Length: 340
Image (cartoon, rainbow, N blue to C red; front, side, top):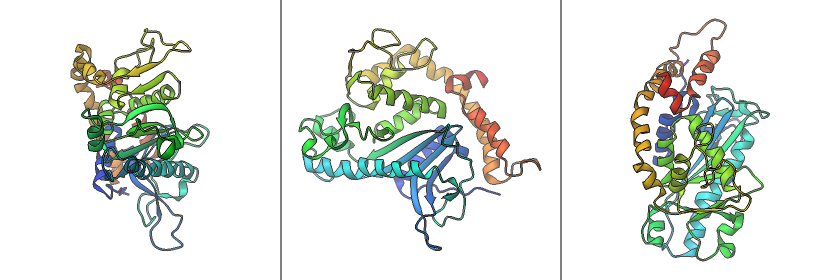
């Protein structure tokens, strides 16, 4: 039986759905997931998140908010209003979505709650949940405020919770994001500039999840003072490798482990420099063959979603079929290059 998924209800949600499907592939990407709470026997369910990505033990929850910046770039009130509507509201939605993962039988692909989520979720004991708030609409105001730049939000880890806004927000630090709520799961905030960039550069679920995990650890480690934007953080990450050959946020000294009081500030230009490095250019060229692996997975996944896959009597729903494809999808971009 064919699986009918939403394509997103707003332009930004539709773009996010296409971008995620391109990076994480169609079988594990589900836009606009709903819960049956609130139906009372009729009407629509309630949206859980704007995008759900499931692959193995990893679950990525996306909340997408397209909010026009409500005033002059130098207005603290405008910043507060935008941050509350774009970031705080997303964090709240993601917190609720994480709770609903414990009740997967009440998750559906449509607002009428007629099509159940077709993929099994990892149980609570092993699942790793990654929360991503997509906060759009402040890019131009950010560029105006700083007199140029890419328009991406600054990263300042020591700004926590309510210190982002209102009386607790330092006048010289609008358009900056730190730790939304240390008492909850970490919330990654990506914006107009960085969402597309990160999904394009880390376009397998393994590479993306590895970045989210190490990004969270680095931001909460105390070693990052600030970054001019997430693109600079990504540039630093891609320019460093650990002893196992994996990208990481290692110390500038070259050591895998940081000294206790060692700190780092990332300024504008790191991403531009990374893009020009010969090894980065060569990596892009060498990766071209790896997309044959993506096409192979999508060819089989397309049949499973369309209900045209040939499955066995012992596995009529295609669960084992999905497990095989999932194993293929968890290969990193580097490993796909060799496999292809």
